[in-house]
Image (cartoon, rainbow, N blue to C red):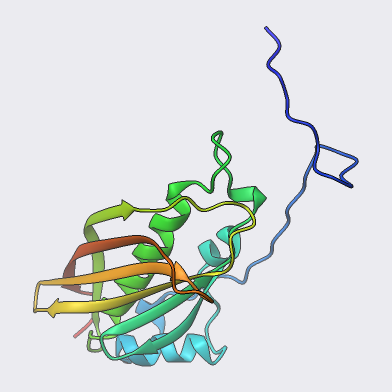
Length: 179
């Protein structure tokens, strides 16, 4: 069975695409010394630590970090399309999870870490390959000794239009080897 294919876009002479990206060897925050989560994220913003490889893979980056808050921005594109012709919901979920987890991280003292144990995502508007840049801002609701919760939204970076929102619960724990 041969499936129909859509015609190439105007000016497009090939249906084959290629996307290449590079990344730096990840730095484990666990090995970064006795710094708070906020200090570690700010060092990353200043270029002292490389962004996580997933950022380059999907095309997003950390742009702000303050106590209880983290912001990522990402670029939708054709490489993220699902068979329906919209950007895969996993891209939005990853933007949200990154903002949520990093917001929690900003509240952690040295030697403490987090892991997402629940992620609830609501997608409210489709994202297309040519959708403007997206901004995901996460904010902590509760930061306790063993759990933390946060909420986040993905909005258009220019027009503020809502595309998705989410909540998370994170386990908070002592890093192995930390005092």
